Each structure stands twice: as C-alpha cells, then as structure tokens.
Image (tube, rainbow, N blue to C red; front, side, top):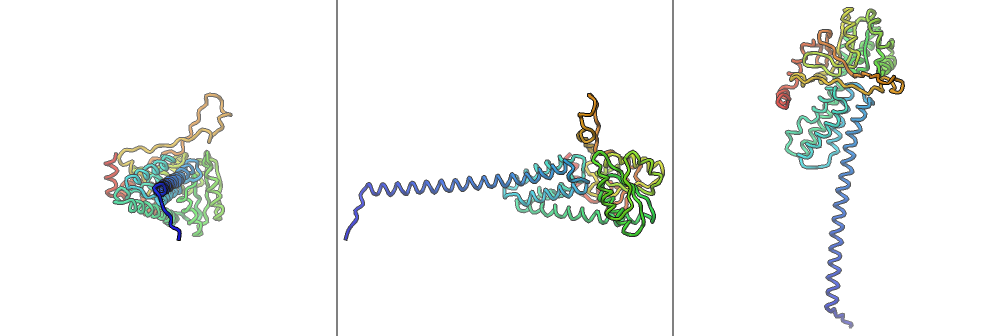
Length: 358
C-alpha cells in the first residue's frame, strides 16, 4: 500500500489554486454584471430610438393629421413605458418626462398631440411604485387611442345628419373627421359632390381626393386660390381642426381662414369637425398657440430664388370664432362659445393643476 505524504509546499500550492479559482469566479461575476449593464444600456437606447423615430416621422410629415399624430404620440408613450427596464420610480418619471418632450417638440402647434401625451402620463405622478406607474401609462395610452378612433366614427354619424341630398361640399387639407362626415353622407345615398383644395405646399388634398374617389364620391381637386370662385357653387364647408382655443378660435391648416371668409361672404355654413381632445386647455390661462413655420424649401428651391428673397411658410392660420357656424364633436354639435364649458366639464380638477403649474 502506498501512502502519499503531503508536505508544506503541497499545502501552499493547494491554497494558491483555491485563491486563483476564487479570483476567477469573482472576475466572471464582474464580467456578467458588466455585460448585464451593457445589455440594459443597449436595450434602453433602442427604447429611446423608438420615441425619436416616431417624433421624426411626425416632424417630417410622414404621419399627418392632428388625430393621427395624437394617436401616434400616445402609442409611442405606451410602448416606451411597456419596454422600460425596471428602475426606481423617480428615475422612471424623469425618463417619461424626457420622452414626452421629445415627442411634443415634433409638432409644437398640435394640441391634440399634447393632450394625447398628457393623457398617457396623467396618473404616473400619483403612482407609488414603478410597476404601478408603468402600467398606468400603458393602460392610458391604449385608452386614448381607442377613444380617439371611436370619436371619429361618432363625428361622422352626427355630421352626416347635417348634409342634405344633392349638397356640394368644400373641404380643405386631409382631415379624418371631416372626411368621415363626407363619406358617411355618401354612404347614406345623399348624392353629394365635393370640392377639395390642393392644400399647398404639402398637397394633402391629393390624399383627400384619392380617399374620396375610392369611396365612389364625385370629387374635384381645386387650387387653393380658387376657393372664392367655387364657394358660390357650394352648400356647406367641412374642415378639420388642429387646435381649438377656449374662445372657440380654430387653428388649422394654412388657408382654412380664407375658406371661412369666403363662406361668410356667401352665407355658406362653415363647419369644424373635431374631437374634443383638440380643445386646448392651456389657452384658458392665456397661453398662446404657437404657429409652426417650416422650411422655405417646402415652397421653393432656394437655388432658384433671387438673392435676398425670403419665404414665409406657416403651417397653420387662425379662424376667428365669429366665422364658425358649428363645431361637430363626438359629444354633439356645439357653438364656438361652448368650447370653454366642454373643457371645464371634461377636465374638472385637472384644470386647477394646469393653472397651478403655470
């Protein structure tokens, strides 16, 4: 029988091996932690990329129409919250605020976007945990998108009742709410005809005539400056809204106010089709609606313009309440003077929070 005798050197060697193994295990754990952090950072970067991508699509007019961009913004906030890694509540609230600013800066005039995003985050500050805050944003985003879509259908049903058989209608730009009314009236067999403006410089009128034509409606595309010429052949005007102020003023696609003036001159009813979330509560406290001005290249190539020539390219204009005959909403037909009352009834105590934050 052979007996192995371990000397002091052997013991030291064993201890050394154990020490090396412990170091290797510790280093492996550190590497795993570093990789986990890097994975989180990469994932987090992708989440912000989605928000920036949506903001870019809105800014670059890939997504058009106040209702559409509101739904897009709300959806982006919902996805942002759903994909967010678990973090302390305060950090999540700060991240929400950053995402909100990125989206809102894409279209500063659109109160629909502001209201849509605010609807998503309104409960987050009252949450007691990250999970509660995240779930509230996801839930509110879905609720807003569903509400927005159903509002357009309700407006179509209500507005179509104001259309008479054989009416000729004039519309401007490419409003889902206004087109919903027109298509519903056509579906009811009212034998209508439509004039649609080209809506320079982005020519959204081409989208309008395509949609109406595909629905089987007799539609004629006109240049923007022909509005007054065709108004005398028109029975009623339907336009959408980007924003409606507390005083009942309409902020909408540039050129809308000239339709209103021409309609007033010829006693043609001028109707605004809009969801109530496009009403701007901030205007109650004196906040002015910012009119976005876009790049001159949308109007003319700078290379063909004489040196020193400037280009003024506002996206929207303001139509005073006195030129608006009716505002058709998902809640019914109201006058411009009723906008304030609707906002107060809808927002309740939220109005006081907005006032105190001014």
